[in-house]
Image (cartoon, rainbow, N blue to C red; front, side):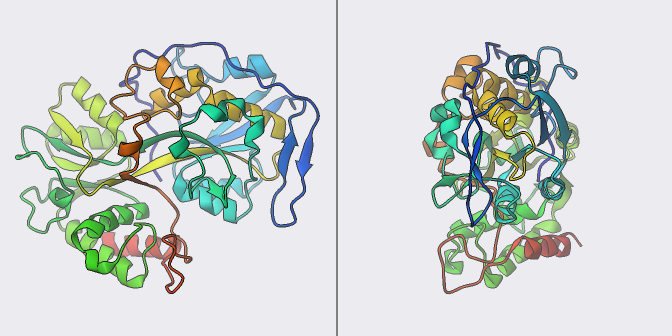
Length: 391
């Protein structure tokens, strides 16, 4: 549900090295009466692979010559890449239903819909050597696995932070109350992310400040809990100067001072600081939402072998570093930090930091917090609520 970042801010220090080529022979699928088959052996490359991804996730040097992780893949595997980009998770889900793509890079507010709709297949991580090096805290999570079965390879991750103008916001905020309190002194100069998934940000705040609501997972809201989040966001609506999904427009607003505090991403912070704009960002005391993207294989992929080769390529330290650095997020492995000089800024590998993040997850009727005596609100309900909030 987020716009892609193709800024070059914070990309210094990325090195390029050789691809690790997958080896194997023979093909095979594991028949599964309950869902799509999982590849059991890696076979010969089919010669092409069709990829659906966020802009900036599949670069061939045509945007910036020094950022090319497609050409090395094609040269090493013989799999020629075609790519289609999308702008929202809803769009990605709809495009995957066409059956035109072998691979998709999806955020957590899309992955579970793709799994439930059987648009993607379980992934045999034994066929992906670079999977072993991925941070353990990114594996086997609600948004990329089912009952311990992986459905993809983690790509990168990041937090939705609280950004503020240091010359205009004092004292420095440490809580989301800076954007949620009804009497905020920054009314009219507050910004918020423009998406139904932002309801989870309000739920994170309510978890800390209204414990009587019983929220334990911001993506598992029953009707009463959703109503409380909606009420909070309606109060905030009167104070929001603008909602954002285009990071460049948000950056311009902070630069001009029209916006002084609100939700942001680390890459935006770095870009603004690089331009001399006096901003800082903090992970508030309540915690925050975030994202962890996953590379997934289509259940009816025409080129499953090339698809698996791509998953291993993009998980390799060299190219994961390049791709996540280009986009502006933490990489998926410690080894990738050998090819970046900004891992500390992105808290890469910091499990304690990551534990404070609630990664985007699709809300569904079956409560994700384990409750069996309640019915939770699904993404359709959140979408309707967001339209009501914004008016």
